[in-house]
Image (cartoon, rainbow over all chains, first blue to last red; front, side, top):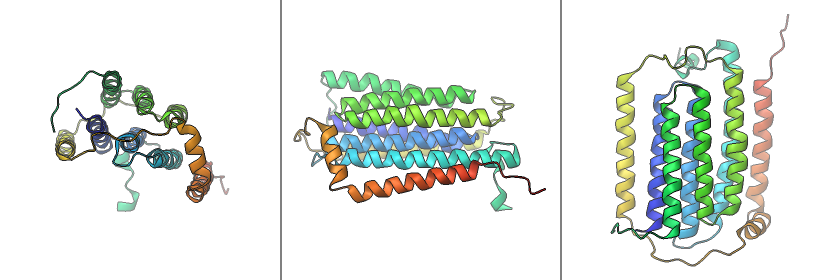
Length: 102
Length: 173
């Protein structure tokens, strides 16, 4: 079995688990963590292609490093927004964050 | 594409780490307490770092442990501690949404696996340089210097923004 296909399948499974968490869970922190899981699945794809791709090079690893940096920024801003919303509404339930819709 | 499996060392390492990652992710969705979910996802991130080592990306694996396990999970746990989670585990179940979500995710997974099985991958490839960390450093400061600086600016802006957002606003009285 081709190793690249195995890595891509694992990344697809992790991505779908993360997507399910984003769709179904109501706790905002779990939603943020599920987004991190999806980003990590993409990183796994990038690193796998950097070793087994048509032209193996370090560009894939570099891209995964950039993705991790952006993910860190996203997590920091997400948790900050969450804390600010919690202060205003005393809730971490994403169903109740609907001020823009009203 | 044929699925005849040879039990090389890499395959065994991949398989055990992949099982760890998937079990961590699935358990994270099954736990009722938020802290347990965060720790279970940390387990998944560690397993993914192991997979990066198997893929000969030692530097990425190190950054993964440092950033995801060390920083993001701890940040989320701080977020959990700063917010109250009363009545967790007793949330009303929403069978319609859960079923639709599960069907959508399984459909996406099926499409992805079908596409992966259908694709043609190169059988064998040239090896990567041995000292990947040194090569990554060289690339970051020559070819990728501009993206590198842009990412550092983005990080600075994001963290200043996070501090400004989370700061307690003073009462105007």
